[in-house]
Image (tube, rainbow, N blue to C red; front, side):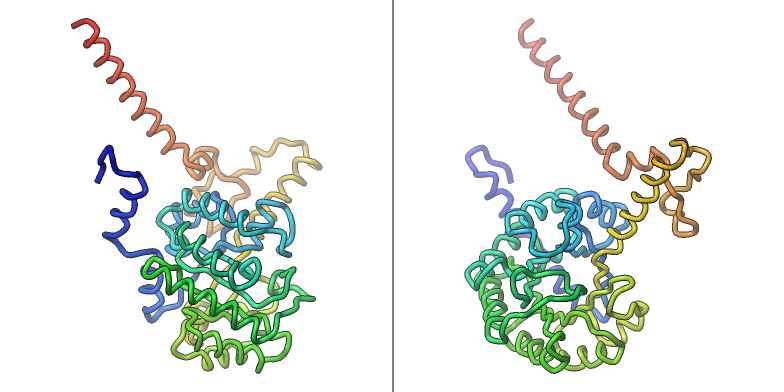
Length: 339
């Protein structure tokens, strides 16, 4: 594919043309008779761990997670389009094989801004982009005090997203249309869900059902279109088992803040130990490989595993490769000078 007079991006385009786009790959997964269990990530490290180390095919780039990890602030419209686009690029580098469902919030403005968000995130490698119907400033769907825009404005946002997807063709990301209108009642949430389906959304997400019966009815109303459920620990929606979620009819179950919650808890416990203890804890550490940690999670992993998690083996391998290449070129130049 390489040619000295060909622009690098054209080489990339030729390579991509020979395989399915991220959205096409995700669509194939959604066509199967299973529900995708999808962890939430918010930075390159969490994405690398979930995708490269554990093999998750699909990741949800959670606005809650990104806001907490990148800014140390709540999921309350603190992030803009540029913030999320830059984080998407970093996460794509850390987990290049993962299919990314991108949290697009409200689309960052009106219909024109929604279209830009769909195109920008799609060109950045997102397989799917979620657009919601909250008023600005939007906030996490499992918190109190959120408000939604009118039915007409919500539909206009989704229409703009679908139009941009269609204009992009096969490379365009799937559109996930989210409604938080359950705060106005079940009927309004389902009314919007059905409208989003009719407009052409690939996935419909009716946020925060409070019981299993509501979950069942949501899926029943959306038959023929993929649905997603948001599973947040100790919050509003029941944490049903994977098989039960699948039986209800959901195609995607995201766990947007599970890894964030676990990591913050671990960081807090060890910071507290360092502050209140003697600062020496080797005797408390069990050197258990990460793959065995599910049967008794160690407080800390061995340093060799920590190095592996952040990519040192690949770094050392590349350093060795290019050191050998440098030496080879240097020898070649030296011989040319002698001759």
